Length: 282
Ligand code: C2E
Ligand code: CA
Ligand code: CA
Ligand code: CA
Image 1 (cartoon, protein in one colour):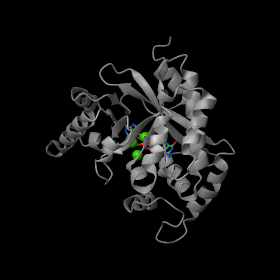
Image 2 (cartoon, rainbow, N blue to C red; image 1 turned 180 degrees about the vertical axis):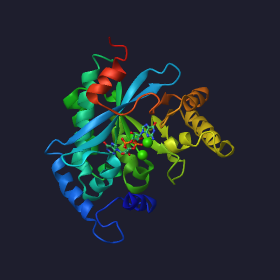
Image 3 (spheres, rainbow, N blue to C red; image 1 turned 45 degrees about the vertical axis):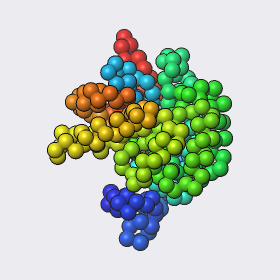
Image 4 (tube, rainbow, N blue to C red; image 1 turned 90 degrees about the vertical axis):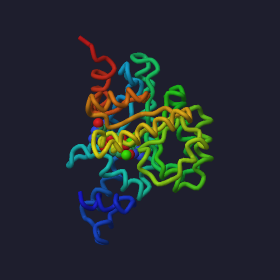
């Protein structure tokens, strides 16, 4: 909606006061409801397959948060993550996401050995000095191998969190992988790419969407980012792959992983298990 659009354009989190400095009653009630979402078990994770380029085999699942609201139905993260970041609820919610995603990935090992799970972290979670302990807790309680957990961070972590590099070092020391999400949409310099213990980056889907338009600008950007990333030994995931031509373009350039509706949509765990992990089940 409009308030969300304006908040995004202004680069600030969505809050209850965002609509022209007036209180938005719809958001006030959404915020009140959000306090109950976790204790009332209204949150769930959907999983989207991440595929190896070329062979098109599933390598990982990205955990994507959904809120099953009693009246509104399924609410997407774009509608409440900003709110949860503003009021701090993203901290307990994020800890729950980590535990639940690790538990699920560990449970899937029997069916799909080596399947890893990607979890999105918000910059707000990095303000908490105990983030590495929260991650370790999720690993210990699930007994998931650390290298099967990939934490997706955005450039905002690097820009807004004073001790980000130190915390990323601590997370790296746990053996988990770090991936830079939405690559190409931020404003910061490229220098952190080799300074931080990153395993990979995800090229933002806006570049994939623009393939085939405007004098090949998106093609050139993707080609350049791919070259840069591979020079620095970083894995490249391209997200938002909706068309076979987009997948083919990325594969021809040597992209490592593909993600998008062409291969699989985000699915509830049970559907992911049936459709992605065992596609030929009879
Ligand atoms: P993201 O991390 O960039 O996740 C990718 C988004 O693109 C997801 O939206 C996914 O459903 C969507 N997507 C995947 N493939 C395609 C495609 O082929 N075409 C199009 N048009 N879209 C595609 P979703 O699930 O609505 O999540 C939106 C954002 O919410 C995520 O963007 C992420 O920033 C945030 N988010 C989701 N779950 C969590 C979470 O557990 N914690 C935090 N902090 N943020 C989360
Ligand atoms: Ca992500
Ligand atoms: Ca992304
Ligand atoms: Ca995003």
